[in-house]
Length: 275
Image (tube, rainbow, N blue to C red; front, side, top):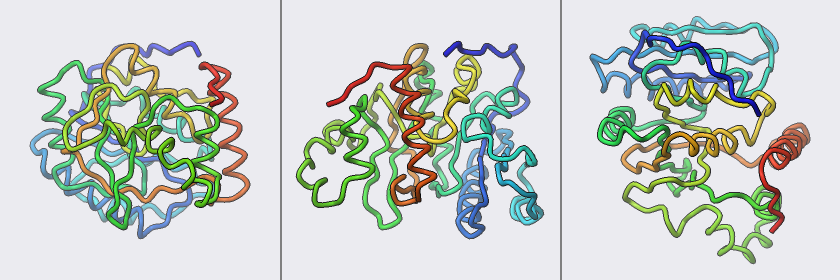
């Protein structure tokens, strides 16, 4: 892919947040936005703005979001249809602040999550991207850092029944970097999840955002690998979130097709590793 190089801009905000939605479940999104509001309050007087990019096929009532966040500058972008996660995030690329957070609509963050991320980047300016410590809704740990994927690992993790997974437990745990990820920061994981990506804004702009060829899935793999060429990635466990998440296989045939389509794009761009 040829990386785009947007014209240099002077950020109007210290922190911008991009949330892409598609026919969202209001209760889940409310939890995300409420936690975001509390986290933004913790970083005052820094200036923050939220961009909600609505990929839903039809217009929906959006006044409730404005009512929920009366003190947070909010811009809602809608009417373009489902252009994909990466392309939707790129709609606000030229508006990214000094720092920019790509946030899933099913993530609940701790009140001090943004404060912790900003403090870490202030102390380590070589950091281009932060990934947090994540938990499943049941309180178990969710591993957002990954080693470079083999096709076998992806199929095993995404589609195999639990009995088969149990047979390859050690392999899957190594893929999820469980031997490296602990209670202290860890530098330069190869790949991190797209559910919560806290960028240095200059790095994000230099990358040209996400590769729009990925409608869904693997766009976070791609951008992680590109970040590593120009800056460092840090796993920062002081930044804590709860992420609902879910496997592609459990979401229906459309999601499975998108997963396979994106895998072909990814391995057409990066080295193919079968096992």
